[in-house]
Figure (tube, helix red, strand yellow):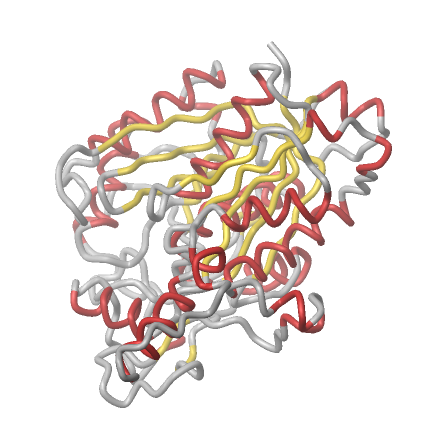
Amino acid sequence: MRRVVITGMGALTPTGNNVADFWQSLKEGESGAAPITKFDTSKFKTKFACELKDFNPQDHIPRAEARKYDLFTQYALVAVAEAIENGKVEFDQLDKNRIGVIWGSGNGGIDTFHQQVAEYVRGDGTPRFNPYFIPKMIVDIASGVISIKYGLRGVNFATVSACATSNTAIIDAFNHIKWNKADMIITGGSEAAITESAIGGFGSAKALSTNNENPATASRPFDVSRDGFVMGEGAGALILEELECAKRRGATIIAEVVGGGMAADAYHLTGTHPEGEGAYLGMLAAMEEAGIGPEKIDYINVHATSTPLGDVSELKAIERVFGRDSKLNISATKSMTGHLLGAAGAIEAIACIKAIQDDVIPPTINTVEVDPACQRGFDLTLGTAQNRPVQYAMSNTFGFGGHIATAIFKEYEA
């Protein structure tokens, strides 16, 4: 079986605009939540989110080119450029027919869609849509743009599984390389959904926190007072590569992908199964593919979005897999970054890989009083980061529609 390794990473997040800054902010327990600046929130129930800070796309993409792309594609290009740079990838020295892109987004160009339809409704009924409206909006366009920019002619498609999207993309990339359908794949996800329609829609579904008085502490997974998730935006990119290909080009191998499990709750449009049935099956499938038992997992970056039902059901599933009082560490980095929807799995995969590299567990912040229903004997890594050896790390992501995707990363050993 072909081994699949990670040779490059890029991050654009509410707590850091590159991998180094993102990881440092996680270790220090910094929150990215603040009042929304993108639009007037005076009539919205939720008035805050985790926006990108000090970021201008035109610092990275020429203005004429950027006009063709929605923000979610711009975010993707920036994260991918960092992954390629720190992965020291020279595409002209490789077979581009064997290099692909599998990229995900939950909402695609929702900002473009919102703006164009709003302009049409305000007008006299004459259709004056931007000629780039459709290619800016469709979810698969980021994967297409990445392949065009770098001339990559291998497998190319987009994944959509709501908030499990970029974990699904990573698992698909892992499988395609393992199956000898590609030697290298750029994968990950991006999201730019801090818009009137997304904040309004998720708010109406009662999914968002309304703690407007204390936005920095609003994302509080497992806390008895948690009241919903905090919207985030950004992108995460990973370069997955077949081991021998990476060795031939002298790449620095960061970590290895060893397992991916996908399942479904088959329960509810937006809610997780109360006993975490899909999460249980996804974790088991990932470990089976990795060829390991539960005792090998040192760290789980949990989906834990800070919703009353979701946090509990995930912990029930973890207890069912690992047993009560397991020695593993758990943390919910969404307490800092907010929930990046389709990009969540990508940046959380990076957090797992950095935990393996540095033997550091990033914390769960803002949790003051743990909900009795979440008291299951696990180390939730509350408040501050912890130093401990990490050989295997697991990343859980779940999406509306009952989608489940779990990935397992391992310290690379020759």
